[in-house]
Image 1 (cartoon, one colour):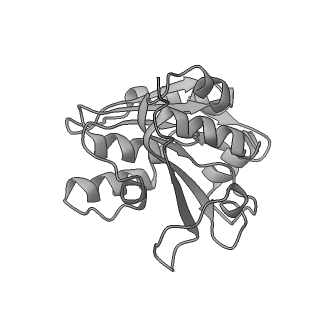
Image 2 (cartoon, one colour):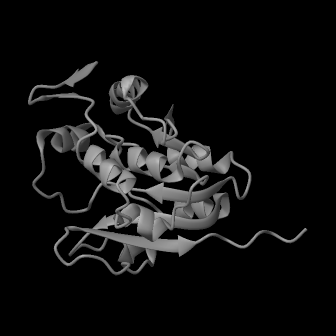
Length: 204
């Protein structure tokens, strides 16, 4: 399945996720998402912004067959292309399969019981777009552009058991607006990561 508009077309491709997965399987534990989220084998992960599916695929190999990765996508066009692509993607015996869901993050989070997932992850549209490959340009044109709000972040903290992780762009206010500080990382990347702990369980 392909997505077309007047400027370009896009078909599912794992892209850099393929290399990140290979590195992990070869014993390289330096993947930024896995490190910041402190992902473990058997974890249940909720990716609230499926997009092109790359971070979800990496999470799937990190948590392994006994883990679970649910990935939400509000854009029907992106969901259709990526969910179909994931059906035929060879995840391999050391990875769980990504479970795509066509829905918005806020509504989905509100319907979940507290502590449903170990880690909740967001990769919202960057405030300042950077030059990127055609697939990411298509993503930007079709993706949900509503910013991540403190209200949604708090809902995610309720749903998480350990961490809520948010990806942002370097030299922007993406994380600071949410009260998050960037975690230490490579100075050569244009991506930064923030995280906030899960809310403590409510007392009965």
